[in-house]
Length: 363
View 1 (spheres, rainbow, N blue to C red):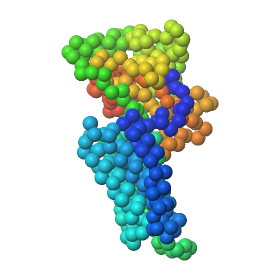
View 2: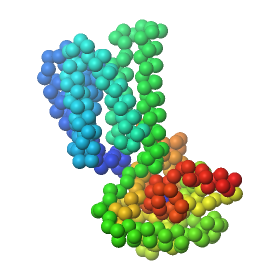
View 3: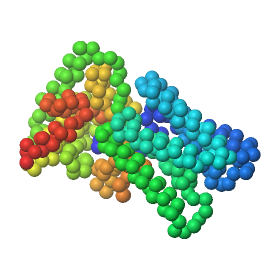
């Protein structure tokens, strides 16, 4: 998209309310040190020890997620707490309890599927921490399901492998659906305040002015002449960017007459303008949201760039993969301002049914 830069690390792709969950992993060495003092650790085989460590890791992450959800989603915070406690208890029980395998399998499967459902229904977003946590749990589940004895061709091996693959596919499908639904996994800027009637009026006026000034670009040739070029893969919507407005001291900031980007719908009769896009110069900047009246400011922590065409090639999968020969990048904060007839309002999530109606109307 616009003003994209390479990811500087794991933390870049973690939602702010999940950061404590990542930090909780710092306590894992203390848990392992406690394991080493137990007679059950000495008596356990290598698989049990590794499963115990993996269960402790995911337990710590879930406990660390509690503070970030207490205010806005107390029921989710309670589930994270219960999940973390159960994983913690099971990590110790796995070293000596006879029934540890079915208990661990049940808890892991329930947790992985619950994550997929939460993401698919919009109650959680996919980020780096979520992907890593599910990989830890899938790894632990594989160890739990693995038969004790290696007998080639045994039914247990086939069942264990098939079950793990099926669960991975289901969880990935649910998570991928959540990413697609949630504007490609975008992280939304929290509202700065409670908007007043004057704030709402100002936000609507800015949107109206932006559309009036951008209406000349309804002819895509005018946009090309003005310096806008396609920057995303050919799909139902294509983003155009104007590099002249992206850098330098004269970079326009929320200038309705000079947006950094334009969004077009691809139709059989040619591009149709859907709206304009404004992009800030720095990832740490906060966009003017008219005290929360304009709720569309967001950034993308999980998009992929092709080094060949220098355009977007897709988005990260739930397990952190980009398309071949692409690498992950993070966008700067951006705001879409849609044309007046967009059903969700000028700053809302783009309505795909509305886009399809426009495409059909120009077929």
